[in-house]
Image (cartoon, rainbow, N blue to C red; front, side):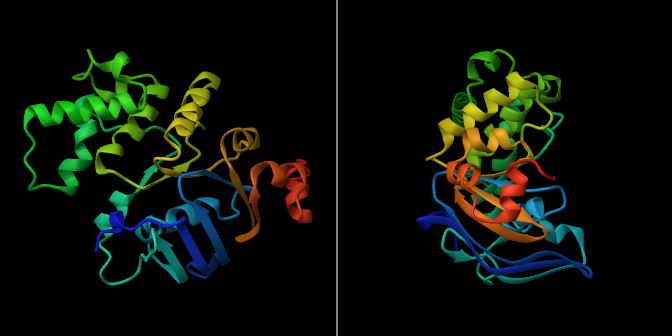
Length: 261
């Protein structure tokens, strides 16, 4: 069953989600609903479970071995552990961008088409179709004008800001519904950070964004809702302005007022 055909008010929903790495419990009974078509930030001190939670939603945690997951995860209204859910289809619907830009060491053009060729190996694209896909993807992330004459350039030679935008662009031909971002601006300077934030704000609505960030100013700037985690537990989830200005939990107040973390 394709996850791409289902539309819900909440793109992601968990119920009593717990996860262990061996004997260490990294997530403890996490219940969360991520609204469709918005930017939601995950904040909290290092080691609190933010990235682990993020990686639950495309099942990347399973790559690390000795991982046990309990509870329920629904993506676009479908339990991702149901036997009829294809892992490749899940990862088409749920794209991911990492801390450091990681374009493939091939041309800009081939980076954009790579996902399509992996996920649809039997699909034969004409040159005209390929050109259109590349142009549309680069236009969506405001790179077309900069790179239209550099499509054969090795992607790893681009500026870091361009590389990170390219990593977003190469997800788009797969038509994801959700984009997970794990500290997407941590390797960028202030100008690059602002450019990626502006891009997220433009794309939100078309895509649901869930971002992990240690930058609380960034969380306040870009996200409509914010989740605070501490030691594997979800402590507070509210509209971003309310969470920062009037936190209801003492641990949240301590963190946003920079008493620890």
